[in-house]
Image: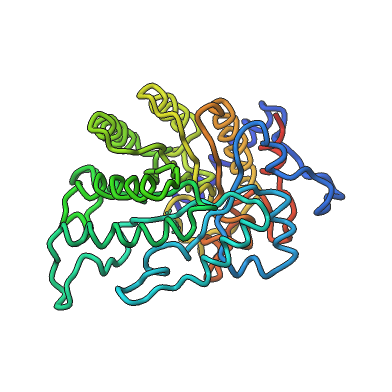
Length: 368
Ligand code: GLA
């Protein structure tokens, strides 16, 4: 099978790279939950370190101790997405988000506003009661009311908002933007109007919010990198208030398509067009190839080595850009709390294992 041939080649290359780099990092045999330095403290002179969690996570004292040791920022995994908090005109579900906001207030953690507009989610604001599209100005007016409600409710603790999440497409043959219901009604103008609406709320209520465009695949897809740079320049010339770019950072340990070098080049390009605030918003590195059938692949040590090396090089790049990168967040605090390990899938995408202990990748990232 092709996979096993590739596997052997990767294993071979990894061992040479590991050998040449003098080893990557090792976990002390007697490591305990107290015997290592919290990640956020190691990176105190660089950027905030965060992760996504849900409000249920905060009920568990063990998890909370681990979290507070390692992270200084929180991203709500689901509870601030419109499908959760405001799934229809008359329904508001504030309880999860209120709890997460209180947790951050009590523990002096930053909280990222993820996310106001995510085109792939269902959005009742686009339709009338018969299921037909409303006039787009009606949509923008509803959106303003929605932004006003959530941005003011959490405005004391959320200073950074992912205003639009993943607007750019995957199929770049068909155009720069992802097809969606919202683009059918409004065209790509919806992105500009979302930022203008968010800015209006921020100004009217003195929220001083940082407005972010959050996007995926920017460490691998150079066509997408090009589109993003082109549009950021265009929006900047038009005065659209985009304060920061969020680079998600979901990746694969053994993929050669997404590399720290490619990300490095993109970060320089962003800085060259004047982007002063860059946030890395959703890092994880799956051990598997992109689209691998995980039930057919057994995790091997060489995959972990490859991941460790990639994390090491990735953080080397991020440290280099510390003047523009303001926060680095993972998509999950530990391997037991990751979207990649749900539904029985075995994966180890993060820096901490299921026992909340630091892995080799933690030591690789902290050794500089
Ligand atoms: C995207 C979204 C996140 C999360 C992840 C994985 O990256 O931005 O909010 O949903 O997918 O589920």
